[in-house]
Image (cartoon, rainbow, N blue to C red):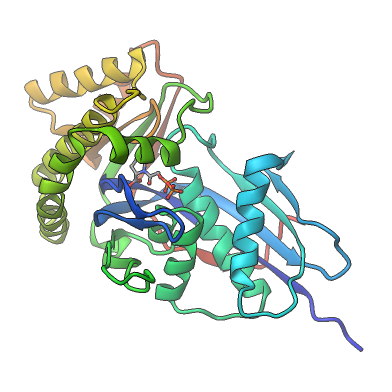
Length: 335
Ligand code: 2P0
């Protein structure tokens, strides 16, 4: 009898939210309180190979050449169990995953990681899922991963159904709609953060007096952002994204106990962005659950902004990104 090879490899790009996801209404199913909007990035990605194998007696997971243990291993294993939900006999798998950027540093490694794991895992199991169902499954691994299934500009609709079947990504526009939109990702620190976004958002929902204010304006931010993307209105996009990021950080800085992802270098860059704007160079910042600052700008201003940011000696590295494509399969396996 010929044994069918249950192996597949997928590449998924990371995404950065222009209107952020912050807070879960259901932590088990990973259902958000608010919808969010993101841009999938062409130059930050994760490649993952999954092979289910009946001879294995446990999950063997390697992430960025390090064997995964403890909570990290458990998250991947739980996800692979979820993907096999419909099968009566669970099979263990070998997984190898590599990202071209530091993980757990606010560059959405869980987004690209769980999107790639979902696509490779389901394909290895012989399932050919719709984009909607892939997004729903990726969401169960990590909320932001639901958005990395799609390319270009993406909305993750919060949905209202208790089972979460209406909480998934939808493409607003393909990457070809606005290829010259640029994001300068500045790396301030590659250290793993002390407060995970998962713990951080839970602490914020529970204790921040500003959380209800966050929710009050979020759906309007989503609508305005979708319009700015459709109309390729850079200034509108930048203004909404920057203010939305500041609002999100305000909720975590006002929870109990408070936490701050900003480092000295982060603040220096934010101030530099404001200065550049005063000088007539249109650029805006956004920040996620980590110290890195991402600068939104137009193609024509990249070099000027890059040289100004490079002068800040707290900046360790700079990665230029543009809208990127959807998660996809490849035959080029990691093992
Ligand atoms: C976002 N972040 O919209 C927001 C902005 C961080 C700040 O999605 O608990 O790793 O796995 O669903 O997706 C990071 O949170 O959290 C995130 P889980 P996730 O990109």
